[in-house]
Length: 381
Image (tube, rainbow, N blue to C red; front, top):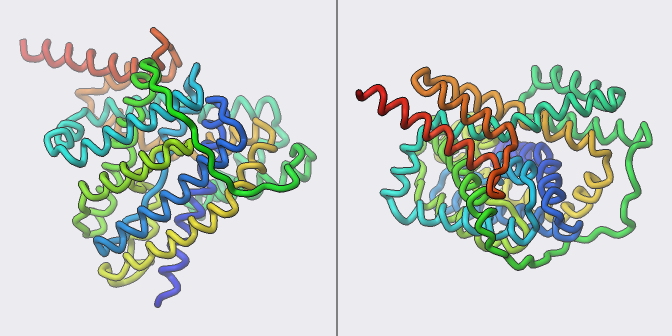
């Protein structure tokens, strides 16, 4: 057994967990979830990552690892008027749509025909507000935030994957040093709580549908591409079905949608993990075991993040989303024929406008598709 199988799996899990957990906590707080419900959601996600990765890796003998939808967390955190119950309803809708996509091939083909530039522009609009919040926090608390931005810029030259994790560790230490950390609870134990879903039409349209689109466009499809680039033929239907079922099971726990890993997947799919591509799947049991350990300690980590100053949490989230924002902007602006509809989508989504109690992500996607349809109709004439 090569040690690189273990180290690759552990690094991938730590980067995925530590790099975006503050955003998960921010999303839970945005919908009014209690501390216990937030802990429950994080533990549900860790269990989902462990079980789906272990099953898919063993079943298909490929380094298939799963993650939660980071763009989806940003979508939830930036929404308004949601409750924990209506958010769970939106999670369930997204899970059902992913499951139907796995079962109905024509629907999967239709999703792949969705203009990538428009979907990427909607994602960029969602992420934009979080990235700019870093500098708003820096203006309010420069002593705490600006050193972390500098550390991030230097660290990403050494390790793009580890830079956010480095900022997380150093930022927490700096907050303690400056006396900015609130009181921590005496006893923090991992617990699971059920949240009864409420199916609110506005939340389903404004959050459920965009959550499905960003999960497919920014996580599942790129994740499949990463596996293909590594020389594998990923079983798309099996992956979508497994992650959708896991999402439906964990949604009542307050857990975000599960999906195929995209960014962290490359840590486990390359020759650094194992020279033999046929043996790289052996990293998945260690990845699963890492998430079981993180599930046990998740309650303490969530409590620690909740005790940090809001500006520091905003900094963590914004810096973690800079790389996805760059990728989304590159994709959105890459097709010159669709550049104007993509910019319109980005502008509407980033504005945060809410019409009929439906969030800006839906209206941004709608505006972009209408503009693209009008341009294509004019070109045909």
